Amino acid sequence: MNSNAIIPICSLTPGIYSSSIKARVIWKSEITQWSTGTKTGIVYIMHLLDESGEITGIVFADYDNGFYDQIQPGLVYHISGFEVEKAISSYKVSDNPYQLFFRPNTVLQLSACGQIPREKYNFLPLLKVSSKADEDPVDAIGICTEVGRLEERGGYFIREILLVDPDNHPVMLNLWQKEAVNFVGQPTDVIVVKGARARFHNNEMKLNASWYTNVQINPDIPDATDLLAWYNNQ
Image (cartoon, rainbow, N blue to C red):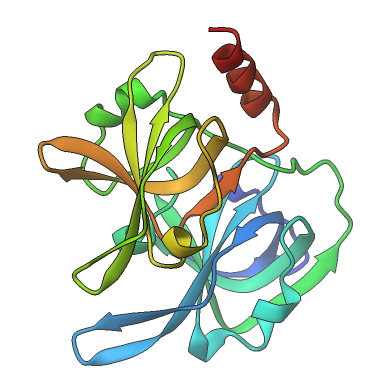
């Protein structure tokens, strides 16, 4: 491939690329532990967006090369020398069937913004959460109507948040670990989650948010403004 070419995210298919994508980092996760059998390590993910679509970028510790501190959400980067593979379900936080993996020769360079959007959401009405398959990624928005207390279950922290939207169909959002501990939202706040997971539990489909999920409280986006107006005018 031409190493100077810029590939749209929507055109990425499995393979090793010397070409670049030019994408905005919408969000990056914290660095977290992973384990598979006897193997362990650390990993972080990021949401990458260009004019054509979005993809999850995944960086394992062996291939970090100091990228974590360089990568600033909101900025645009040229990324080259990566590999695209079929999405790993445990890291799947968007509808894109593929994921972008950083490799030893990955190059990251700050770029001018151009026309790249600042965010992209594929909000699923809360009424339709029950139709999702277990572990499917979900972008959702809702008014917080209840904030549960911080609990510990099986060695993990959890906080239950009840969300509602104009369909008046409540859905439970379970926040785990740091997301649960650090949550400062209150009833009547607008809660946005990108990359939550549908999870069937106690005979109902709920949403789960942990290190892999971008949780926002009252974000400055039109959908949040409209939802709050609906709630206040009931």
